[in-house]
Image (cartoon, rainbow, N blue to C red; front, side):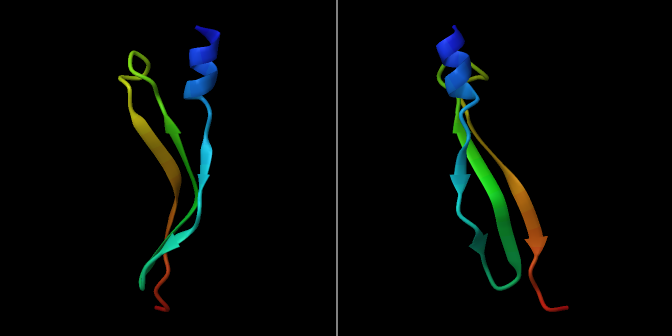
Length: 53
């Protein structure tokens, strides 16, 4: 069980993603195996308005 918990808590970096008006940075993702947190893909980060105005 400890190994599964360690795996579920293993976060990996996402490079900064941007478009003409928004930027997603400091992103991370994790895979949760089946049977833990409903077996899900989870992501987190900061979404920022990147427009000049």
